[in-house]
Length: 250
Image (tube, rainbow, N blue to C red; front, side, top):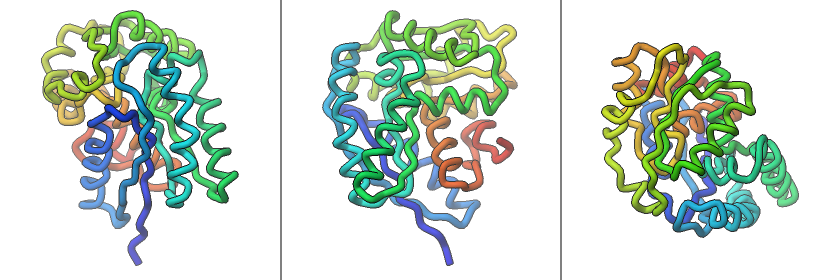
C-alpha cells in the first residue's frame, strides 16, 4: 500500500514561492519513490522584510501551528528563514520546540522544521565548513544571516545582497537569475554555495545548473527544508535534479 504524507507549511502571507518549490521537489520524488504527498498551508501576515515586521509575523506562527495540527499534518515547515534568524542566534531551536508543543497540546505529535534550522542542518549534513551565500535581503538583514550561520560553526566566506525589502518583489525574481548572480560570489576554498538563503526568492531550477558548473554542492533554503522534512518523516532524502543534498546520499 502506498503511504501518503501531509506536508504542512507555515507561510508568510506574501510568500508565493514555498508552495510551488517544495511540491515541485516532492512531485519529482514521487517519480522514483513510492510515497505520495499532499500540501497544506497556514499564513501569517507579512508584506515587507524588515526586522520589526518579521518579529510581528513570528508571533503569529503559534496560531498557524495550531491550525495545521487540526489537519493532522505529518510534518510542519516554517517557511521564513530570516524571520527566525532575526530573532536571535540559535532561535530556530526555540521556535521548533515551541511550535511542536502547540501541536502536542492539540493532540498532534507533529515534528517541526524551520527553514533557518534546515539550512544549518543541511550545510552540516554536507560537511560544510565554509560557504558563500546569495540573499535578496538588505545588507543589515544579510549580516544577521551571516552571523547566524557562523554562530552554528560554518564560516561565510562571501555574501551578496540584492537589497529587496518588498517581499512580493522578492517572489517575482527570475528563478534562473542565481545562475548568473552567483558568478559574482567568491567561492575560492568554500565547500557549498547557497543559491538562495531565502525561501521566497525563487532559485530551485538554478540549483543543479550552478552545481554542475562549479563542481561543488549547491543548496537553497527550500532544498534544505525539503531535505529536513524527509529526514523528520524518516524517508529517503532523494528528489532528482535538485542538487547533491537531495541525491539520497546524505
